[in-house]
Amino acid sequence: MDETSFQAMGEQIKDLNGIDVDRCSGWHEGTRLVRGYTDFDRSTGTINAPLYFSTAYAHPEYGKTTGFCYSRCGNPTRLELENTIAMLEHGKKAWAFSSGMAAISTLLKLFAPGDHVIVGDDLYGGTYRLIEDVYAAYGVDFQMVDATDAQAMRAAIRPTTRGIFVETPTNPMMKVVDLAATAALAHEAGAILIVDNTFLTPYFQKPFDFGADVVVHSGTKYLGGHHDITSGFIVVRDESLVERIFMLSMSEGGMLSPFDSWLTLRSLKTLGVRMERQQANAFALVDFLKQHPRVTQVVYPGDPDHPAYGLSQAQTTGFGAMVSFKLAHAEDVPVCLNRLKLILFAESLGGVESLMTFPLVQTHGAMPADLLDRLGIDDRLLRFSVGLEDPEDLIRDLEQALS
Image (cartoon, rainbow, N blue to C red; front, side):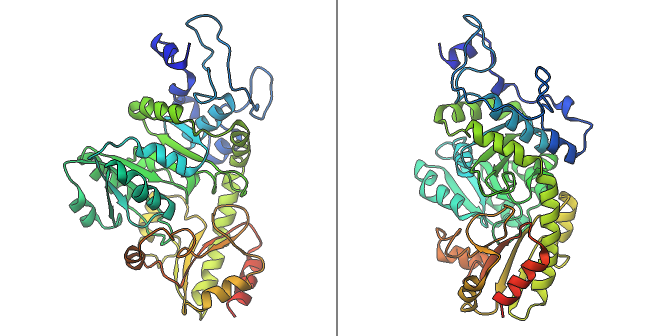
């Protein structure tokens, strides 16, 4: 007897139930992060979520289930993490995957051959590669548009438009997408709005509050926060997509392991304090970089000089800790990277250690030259994930690297 047979008997497994929204109200965000969805186990009193490694679950009797049946369908530790993420995002249901790309890959299977999907043009290079090199071959019509250009977005809408996929802030140029306006445009066209919320996390930004239908995360970044977990998440606002996404996730089996789920639950307890401190450090680094003679451009949504600063204030409670900047000369880039001592020259972002990335040859190497040129991702651009180190030490390291 498999899981679909039990569903046919009317016994939905717990993964389809979604969270109890009422029990999530009343606490402030910092409290929710620390305590999680369940808070603590009433049967044992344990204040940490138990770690369940089991891959199979016994049924009480024929036609009945405890709510779990097989590890691809649900695991109690993973379910606690999923419910916590859904709670934090103001969503209904979440799924935890083995990577952010696994989550995005599952989402893209919502679309069929002939469907038109508008994609923000400034986005993670791995997402671009997945769209262009994998899913375009299956007949899904992807169109890359500047998601911050309202006229261009409206002009891109077609009768076959079924989805809009955006990042905000964008990676790596830190552009800010108007979530409410984009959601209204998507819904007017009968499409869904998918928002990658990796950079700001639900601590600083809640896309569902502005009309988004699906939120996706690379949990490897701020949610995990320590460069030791690879994970991804899909969250939905209501029940309309739950069964379809559950079927896709269960069938493919790219789910997060129980141990990594437990580690992520532990990491979430400090997400608020990490984001606040990393943001404070980012402000200090932006001030330093804007005054440095070798730096020609600094892009940070929390900078009052950012063209969408007011929009950021309106739709977020914080600006995050991702900073992009350009050096005056391309030849200065390898010199700077080679001189760094405290800041690490590495891909990824969002962990407690500060990382410097060269997008042109690292995260965005899969993009064509004309798109890179249009976006401004050139041989002078560096992306800085500001960590938790003392800001004075980070400034000293940049000072000597840029000297």
